[in-house]
Structure formats: C-alpha cells, structure tokens
Image 1 (cartoon, rainbow, N blue to C red):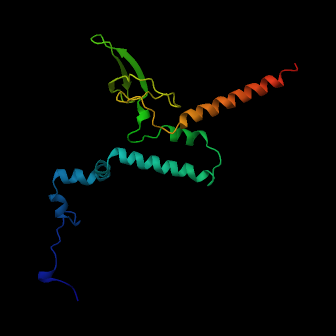
Image 2 (cartoon, rainbow, N blue to C red):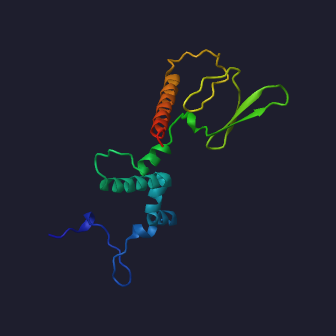
Length: 177
C-alpha cells in the first residue's frame, strides 16, 4: 500500500523534473559559508597552536617508535629536549646577569635580564657568599649566616682532591722521562 494523502511530504521539482530541496535554497549566505568552511572552523575552535602541538606530538611518537625501549645512554636529542624544556618558576631562566653602580648613592645593583627580555634591578648583598656550583649570588636580604649543611664545600673539596690526585699521577708517570 502506498503512503499518500495528508501524511506524505510535498515533493518539489524544477522544470527538468529533478527534485529540489527548498531548505537548501533557504539557507543564508552565512550558513553556506559555515558549511563550506567547516574544517577551518574546527581549527579555529581548537586553536592553531593546539593543532600544531598535536601534530608535533604525533611526530614525536612516530620517532619514538624506532628507538629501543630501554636507553642506557642519553642521546643528543634527549639531552637537548631536557635542556630546553620550559619549567614554571625556574630561577635559572634568568640568563644574563650584570652589575651597575648607582650615581646617586654608592651602592651596586645586580641587573638580571630574563629570557624574554624583562630586566630586574636588585641591590647586591653586602656579605660575600660562599662559592657554589652554579655561581648564584646570595640574595640582597641575606644576613651573612651560612645555615647550610656544607654540601657545596664538600663538593668543591672532593672535586679539588680529584684534580690533585690526577695531577699527582700525571707527574709521577712523567717523572722517569
């Protein structure tokens, strides 16, 4: 039995007899553009940076597939990745350091320039700090009392003792020559 009558939908045709969809003809220009640029809209909604990060992540996964699961030595790429990784609140990101002397009062200031170009003027500490592995100067509010466990001093003593031992062995080996 054929469906007909009040329950059936009206079929519209053009002069050639092809079925015409009236809803498609009623779409506004804005809606047509939106449908045409749907892929572009997805990128705009997700953000171009997020799309680029996702592609970079996929590329890194493809590279990682070829590498062995257990690595015993740090290769150059992994070393570079760890070296340039951004870490929140990293104090060593203050890469350039210099000093200036004030013309108004006889005080010296440290000028710290961050990686993104911001400059900070910090007054220097009036106490000489102990030498450390990273050449970090003491803060301007330090009271001059070393409250550490002397790890840095032990580290330097061990490094100097190793240098002295190597120097002694080198001289001893060259003594007969």
